[in-house]
Image 1: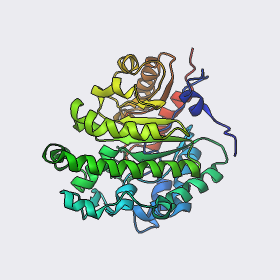
Image 2: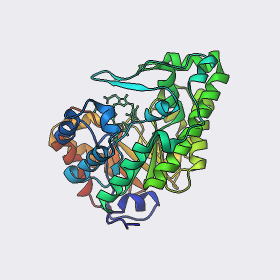
Image 3: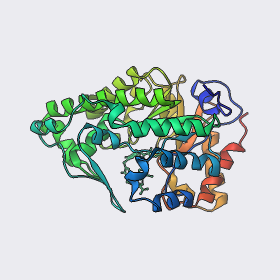
Length: 345
Ligand code: CP3
């Protein structure tokens, strides 16, 4: 195994005292970079890029070379899981994901299966991880990821993005048994998938619960947290980060999960989150991605304000959600360089 030349992220996750805060951005591999858009333009679409390991590896490494981040995140999508279970997706240009088939009733459960060989269905992801690890040659750690079961359930039932996900949420009240069966199946496949990402070389795993914020505390505890907990309990090989966007109401419960890092969105106060989560976890986040539309001076000032609020505790600098595609890469660099130039006292 190659030893890591830059292991700042892992040392921070482990709670060691570090010289500075590590920094990376959610959605760093993507449309902000002209170099990404060039690779993408030569292909039929997003899915071809996800399913071509050499190219997925290439765009995964671009932000390491071009932006100087302290971690890479494998280029893929959370929606490979519903597809592997039996519901294929399309990524519609300028619209987002779209599923022709969705789960609406118990009878629809026959369309999906948890009893699948992930090595067969998702070999392109594991191959991309292996190539990326080889090409990174230990420069920075590689983050693997998945969607949280609740967020995957949202897409499998709604079939597309939505402001309310009311088709997904109504099932929780009309047919909670169906909800639990589907969530259980998603969880089973997700655990198998993450174990193979780790076997292929992922150094850290991040679970994205992008839609936790549309549930209330009671529903999230029953239909969201329960399954995130099962994933966390099953993954002990590498450190796990849970990013439950909008789940400000669940921060105390998140702090009790068997994981090492909790991601924060920009609505969450750092000191308050630290008090709720406790001292024995690392926090990650949480600059408003819109700060990167400001002038360089403002970006520097806002980034330093955020870094000061970390109070020298275990923290990974990041945005509070994915970087928006029309952000100027020079502004992204300004954010990264401000973090890297900030010495802890
Ligand atoms: O750099 C990275 O963070 C790694 C790559 C990554 C992608 N998707 C690539 C992508 C990651 C970690 C994801 C996760 C993902 N995918 C989430 C969770 C994070 C979040 O944003 O809350 C979700 C909800 C999805 C589902 C998804 N994929 C949507 C809703 C969309 C359309 C919106 C958009 O940004 O266009 C995608 C498409 C997608 N996934 C793109 C990329 C780079 C853009 C597609 C393109 O290049 O044309």
